[in-house]
Image (cartoon, rainbow, N blue to C red; front, side, top):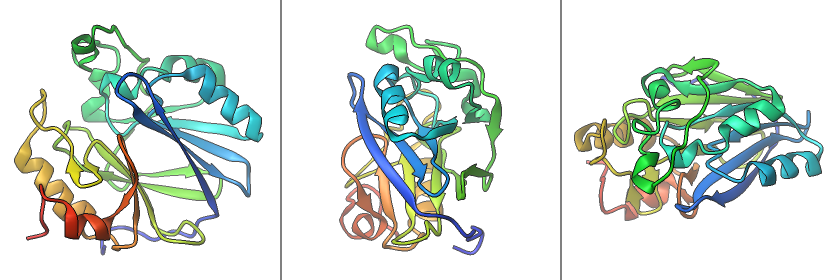
Length: 225
């Protein structure tokens, strides 16, 4: 992928926690060499996530959101207070955080809100987690500010992609919610994700992990051509 830099990174650990009524995947991405961890999409169960970080002896460095829907942000307020770390979201989804109507948690009978983000993400923005360099890929379609987090060189093993609700195993994200677009979603997947190395491991916002190569062959919703 010509427009994605390939920074030198360290050895990552990825822990997956399906949380909340929609079993949203929260990920803890840790750099073992510096005992530093980034929390991605903490949708619920703040106490459990705090215990995990503490039990491993990791120092949290931030909370990063793939998008602003309520099922991905439910534990943000508690974790940000407990850890005193910055919160990252794309600018286009930032207005969703403080509004249960905009983040659609009201549709689940919830009133989920989160504090304003400390930093607004841009395409190809880089987040540092210890020695790990995480690159932001803007991938609108599910929401206007949807992003994926990409580790081009995780030190050993294949690249890693945290795809939020843009791409699932043999599925794609909904585009019938406010701010969604089927045409935009297809374009994001084809132009930003399907051009990544086929061995890239994809950690989606819901369901099991997959690879870019598997989706190129088996995803019935978006084909490369």
